[in-house]
Image (cartoon, rainbow, N blue to C red; front, side, top):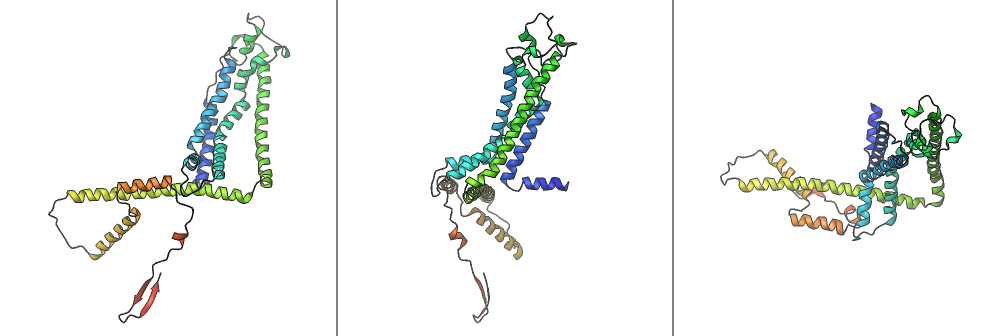
Length: 330
């Protein structure tokens, strides 16, 4: 249970971990879909290859676009690519990094589907049983009245009556399955070698400092957008509360029963109202909020926080009745 909590905390730590977790889930879903999918070959010369290649290609395309859709890097990349320049220049390296990260994660589930189909071999047998030379195998059923093409097309259908008491179908299936698994393991080996070589060779030809900068600013864009959304949600909640309270204040009757309130109650209310005013940031009208959102999109603030980082802090000084300073606090 503790390990499961640690895994969940890792995937919830940042957006990149969440994207990795979603891609892994999609890969597992692709395996589950394939194992639960009841593949039935048509066993017809004109449809075998078309149907098999469709099953091998169409689901990976769907999984790829699904991976692009659920990947947070997609939205961040498109926002950065399509936004007006404004006060902040665009960095093509950041867009390229986000695009590469998005493609790598989106390709995981499709590659898992393709590898599983190749290692299983059923779809490959259905697609390429017609390409096998029947002379290589003994026991060809010649007393069926069918030509050799139709017989080879029926190899994936083990229930067919023409293959009863014959080892021909099993021999052809084993032969084609060996090729399918060889292709699958070759692709897997190639991907592993390609990833290892990329890890080893990339630092030799790439500027590591530039890579760190690109990764930092790509993470910054993601965090900035999330903080902006969270701030907008808080502002919308407080804005809505103010609108509702103001509506009820306007609708109430003129005669109001006024009772004295304890000091601590009024103080708490004042503190609560001050906190609400701070969250509203002075934005109290719809036109002001629309202008702020337009400015955020068309003129993103420049990446310089010197003014707010070094602004002077309020200094509170306590004095006695004679004006002598007792102590100060910042």
